[in-house]
Structure formats: C-alpha cells, structure tokens
Image (tube, rainbow, N blue to C red; front, side, top):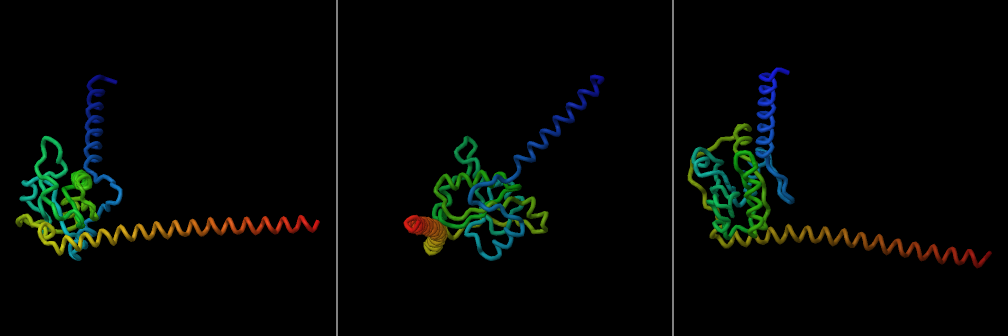
Length: 209
C-alpha cells in the first residue's frame, strides 16, 4: 500500500480504538448487590419515595447547569482518596443505612462513588441511577435549584427507619439461607433413612435365601 494511504488507515483505526475505549469506560460498572436503573426506574423510585438520598456525583459546575430535582450534590465523590478529591463520604454521616440512588452523566462516576460509599460503611441499599444523559433522552427535565439536604443527616426518626429497613432486608436473606439449609438437611436425612431401610430389606431377603 502507498504510505499516505497506510498512515491514513492507521489514524482511522487509532481513532476508532480510542472512541471504543472511551465509550466502554463511560458505562456503569456491575457491582454486586447494586441495581443499575433505567431512567424510568429511577423516576418511579423518586416519585414513590423509594430513595432516602438522590446523590449527584458530578462536578459542581455540571450540577449548576442542570440536575435531577431533589438531588444532593457530592462533588466528584468517586475521586475520594485521591489528590483530586472534593466531596467526602462523612458529609453524608447519618445516612449510612439509608437507600441511596447515585447518578452522574453516564453511570461510570456513579459506580466509582458507590464503591467509595461501600468502603466507608454505607450498608443501605445502593442504586446506580446512571445519569443525566439517559434521563433527558427519556424526556425528563433537569432543574437548576439548590442542592437538597437529605433528612437522614439530622432526623433521627429517618435514621432509625433506615436502620430497621436494613435489618429487615438482611433478616430476610438470613431466613432464606436458613430455609435452604433446613431443606438440604431434610433431604440429607431423608436419604440416610432411605439407605438404612434399603439395607434392612436386603439383609432380610438374604436371610430368606
């Protein structure tokens, strides 16, 4: 191939690879126990009061340019622990047991922020609301209101409710695990009894022969 054509082809390939990698990095990361929501699921959860905190983890300038109504700004929370950190998890002290929906623009920064929350003792249900991109694509509006202070920061009744919800959720898992264990034990004991009965039967038959 002529060199100019070869160089042009390589440049095109490089741009394609870079675009692919950037696109992949912008996707929300799968995290065990964390639901990744569609725009409609996030909207329904907000409308029903499912989340105690709606957390925007984009930058302050992004937030000021438009955010989901009712959101609390935690500026670049996913960068906590780095030299570029701005917001800190302790700013949400009191909400550790509460249900928190986290969003950014695409869901990637929300994933990073959720990991920060998990590493700092937040044991309530965490949701990745992905971001403003799919929110606006779904036809939902953004607002330019002030950042909301979640009630769980100071309201002890809300904190207690969150704690009870976590205990109920974890208790349900424990009951399910116990039921599974009991079922396994029952099946195992049944197998032993069957084996023992079969042994007696074969012994009796052998005695008659």
